[in-house]
Length: 228
Image (cartoon, rainbow, N blue to C red; front, side, top):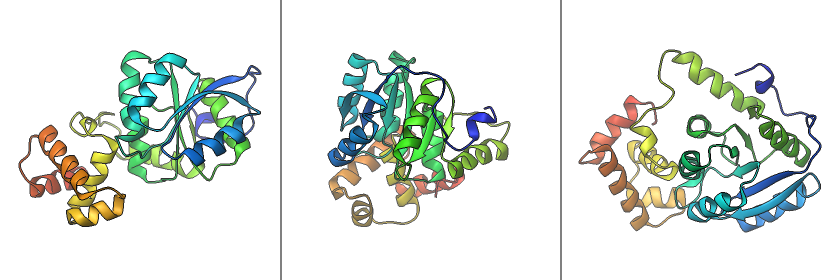
């Protein structure tokens, strides 16, 4: 990763053509706001509110850059990335999230995102970030760049991917992390704004994917990977 790629987002690069951008976020009002703010800088060629919708429409529109939310009810940005990188590796992704959690940043970068900025970014900075990602740079909000550097500096010889962890969707990781912290299903549902039934489904999926039989094994597994 170059020194330039880790600098705060600044002015747009040398390209002058309008970039084709796709928006993925489960909040319609937020998508409308981004569309309005970026309209003078890019061509917004489509938008989606779910993982399935995003995968289908991105494959049809083939944008230059996808602005990708991290947390969505059906798997989130990581699920979109994992589906698209197998079939359309040329599409570039820039995570745009309210979350500034280190695990979210590292997870999206490992999955293939070219950058990660928070939703506090200004419209001008976001437009510049989109263009830099389209040009091949990696772009992070200044504080988040430190997470990436720290993650790889702390374990320089570790593999970039964790095959077991990479099986889990972003939402499954959230549920696992709260479960490992001792939250009851009802508390997890309240924390994540989902139903208890949905929590049960996510836990069942995590147990199946990791080939474990109970929450205590999951808690130890999560602690070993410092997810708690």
